[in-house]
Image (cartoon, rainbow, N blue to C red; front, side, top):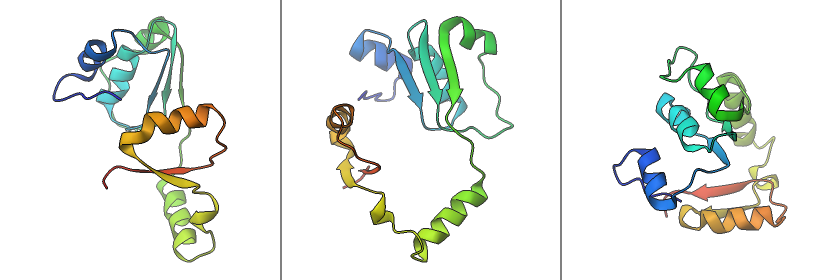
Length: 133
């Protein structure tokens, strides 16, 4: 986990880690975090744009930037807002029980530990990350 502390994200990463990661997963969906993801990943690395930006958003990097720096760029999925609303409605009315697929909770401060556990095969389907205690 990187504490940006008001600094530029890329500068903060390089200061604290000294290396470029092999894989960057962008899950915020803002142009500046998409750009930071491409700037953070090592040359030939992988960027997953999980957070979807609105269709009319412009970015300062070009497709050439992505193809010359990154070996793979992809978006995880695009889901219309109506589907999210319908899914929440099904959870709210009890048709779908969130308890059936949310395996546990983890405070944000223990996220690295959770990732290690997942990589070791903890079989969790979904874990709620608690940002605030």
